[in-house]
Length: 233
Image (tube, one colour):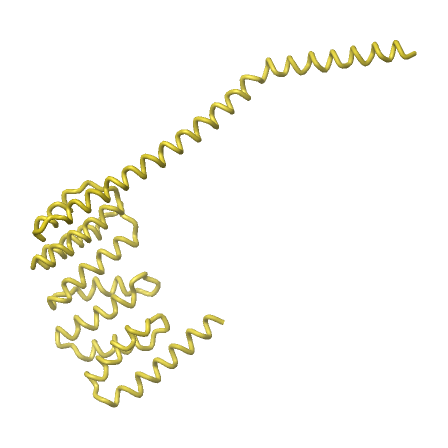
C-alpha cells in the first residue's frame, strides 16, 4: 500500500508544482510591475524632496545675497527681484518692505505688503501677516485703515489682538478717544490678550481716563485671567 500512496503523493506534488509554475507564468509580470512601481515611486519622492531642498537653499542664498548690499533701497530692489514660490514670495515681500521702511519710504513699504496680502496663491496666514504689517506701517504714519484692521480683528483671526491694538492707535491718531477707549477696554477684557499687551492697553487707558481707570483695568485683567483658567480646566 505504501507504493500507491507514495505514487499519489508524488503526482499530487507534481500537480501543485505545475499549478504554481502556471500561476507564476500568468501573474509573475504583475509582481514585477508592482516592484517596479514601488521602486519608481520611492525614487521620484526622493528626487522631489531633493529638488525642494535645493530650491529652498537657493532661495535662502538669494535672500542673503540681497541683504548684503549696503544701501537699503538696493536691498529692497534685490529682494523684490527674487522669483520665489507662493509663501516664500510673501516672506521676500515682507523683508523688502522692511528695507523700504528703513530707507524712509513707508508708503512704498505698505504697497509692497498689500500686494503680498492680495496674493491668493500665498497661504492665508502669510496674507494676514502681510496685511497686518502694512497697517502697522500706515498706523505709524497716522494713516491706518480702520476697515482693514477690523477685518484682521475678527474673532478667530490669527492676529486679532495685534490688529485691535493698531486700531486703538489709529483712533488716537485721528483724535477719536472714545473709540480708542472702547478698543483698549476690549483688549484688557479679552482672555486671549498677552500680559505685556494688556499692560500697554491699561497704560493707555490710564493716560486717557486718568487714575480712576486703573482699578477698572486691574479688575478686567483679573476677570480675564479667571476666564482663561476656567477655559483651561
